[in-house]
Length: 149
Image (cartoon, rainbow, N blue to C red; front, side, top):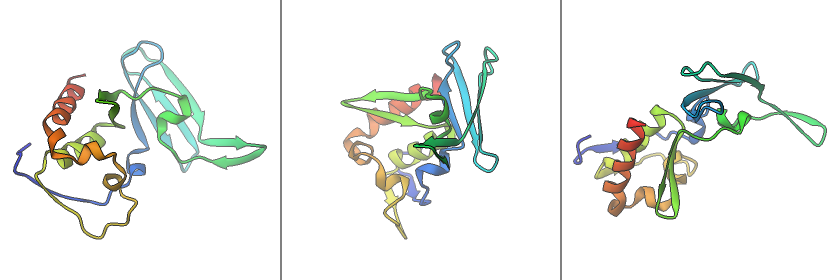
């Protein structure tokens, strides 16, 4: 990505990336995909490498009360994120390739434009280290490593 690029915030929220999450397969340790369909209240985890498959419901039972939990797909399986890497005393992470691309576009841009912010966007909720220009090179190196994973 061009370091002189311009980023225009699309006002995405973290839940825009919930429905498909890349995870570590609990059976073989390779990349698997957890998905959630909130309309049917079903989630599944599937590994293309070993064929591992698990299904779950997105409903939760909280003190005897059933509720529908709309959260990231990996939550239903307590699965570990595939796209994560330590950064200083924190962790850089993304749910899937689209989320990683969005973060890369933001981090690599020297000009970042925001309009009509709602104080709930994904970028506004990111830890400070994602925003700091001094971390740009190191974070982009992490993105590159995660792409090769």
